[in-house]
Length: 102
Image (cartoon, rainbow, N blue to C red; front, top):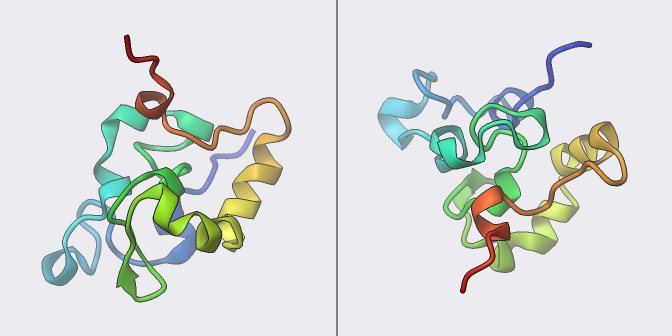
């Protein structure tokens, strides 16, 4: 099985840790979110970036999942992950968003 692409690799944004744009723009929250490690087969939140607030897509900082879900669900990377993971395995929320609070 081949390694799955993370969002920063697919988008070539340079905001992964030690990426070419981290000095000027900082590390993307998706690349830094270790709570989502392994979700949809990604590194940190690299394959669930749509669930992470503050990602930088389309040339501007994005908000929460609720605020950006329409743009994310039409994103080619979102569609790729959804297709690769398939029905029943594809996760739309990160593990900490799925946690049941008592």
